[in-house]
Amino acid sequence: MVEEKPKRSSNRKMQIRTVARNMFKEKGYAATSMRGLASEVGIEAASLYNHIKSKHDILQEVCFEIAEHFLLIQESAEEEGLSATEKFKIAIEKHIIVIIDNIDAAAVFFNEWRHLENDSLHEFKRMRDQYEKHFLKILSEGQATGEFRNINEKLIGLTLFSSMNWIYQWYQPTGKWNTKQIADEIADLFITGIKKIK
Amino acid sequence: MVEEKPKRSSNRKMQIRTVARNMFKEKGYAATSMRGLASEVGIEAASLYNHIKSKHDILQEVCFEIAEHFLLIQESAEEEGLSATEKFKIAIEKHIIVIIDNIDAAAVFFNEWRHLENDSLHEFKRMRDQYEKHFLKILSEGQATGEFRNINEKLIGLTLFSSMNWIYQWYQPTGKWNTKQIADEIADLFITGIKKIK
DNA sequence: CCTACCGATCGGTAGG
DNA sequence: CCTACCGATCGGTAGG
Image 1 (cartoon, rainbow over the protein chains, first blue to last red):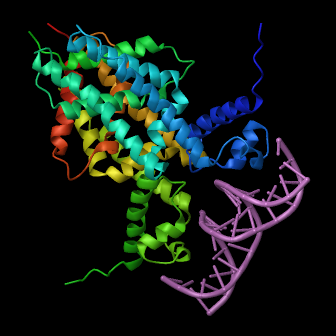
Image 2 (image 1 turned 90 degrees about the horizontal axis):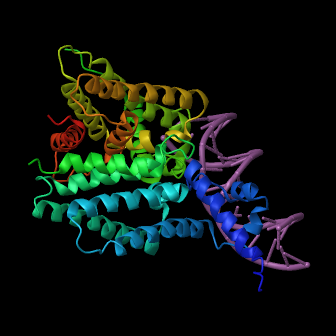
Image 3 (image 1 turned 90 degrees about the vertical axis):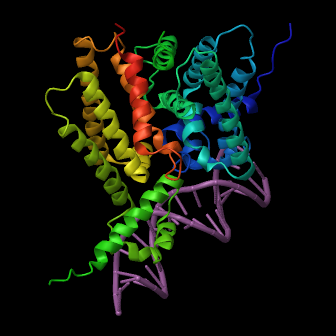
């Protein structure tokens, strides 16, 4: 039996990223110092640079690790034979699961992306816009099939994203609702709010 | 005829606050430097301190100027003879109007309040919690009267706040929707989503 | 992974 | 409202 080598450096890097996610969420990127980060990790600031390239590089990693989660949702959503309503519900639930399962990274993603620079900022916006289209397409489809009433789909889409993307502001892992309850209640609210009354 | 004196210092203070609101929104509080702020105003950094006490003091002023707007809404909402549905719609519309009419300050209020300290942080949270109760009360009332279906009112309340408080992230004054359209569409979405079906 | 250190920039003050 | 300046802290590097 082959025992896995303890990848010490890799573990330390993971630890740095985990601590950084949390500090970026709590204090914001700009207000988090490398000395403060190092202190939480339990090493000197200079030692961080054996594991990471720069403060900005950590931000990029955190932002794009969650961006990839969102892209995976999109790719997996190509199932056939579902109504727009069903697709809508599934998309909402998956999106909320990503946020809640990665609550610190999600907070950084939604709140600190403006500190990205140049290429990474550009790429971030591109991915975000593309991802939003995925939801807008479902809204259009639902109107075309007559499942949804006439709505300002862009505005409803922004409202939906607001509802989901703000969750990190109030969600507490120790709270009384589980992920499914939250996802269901929000999905039902929106579906009831936009479905065509027969 | 008495001509008003040009209150030079007061105007300069207002200008500083206006520029600060915008920079705090765009870059965040921590990433906004007093030298950068002064440069935008057109004076030297040291000169700022003839008009303001500290960087932190500006943040407090911006946060609490908008908090007062929200409290005014609450006080004016004591009209009698309205159904919960009507109260709900009015409360949503007024809240959204405050945000859109004070979009920079609103962004700071919702995004930078964590940089408040001690008393002002405590007071901020107290006001915010109290204000949220105002909405929760309407939701409870609507369920009691049978206007609204059975909902998790705390969760729906958080979702509503998310929808409204995220507006600053996407609202553009030059955009194609006016304040009333935005407020109406969001209010209708929520009311349709929670009303009891007869 | 540390000590020692770099130049740059920070919020803010003294004094005029 | 400015010049000149303060001590503190910033992100990051050199060298071991």
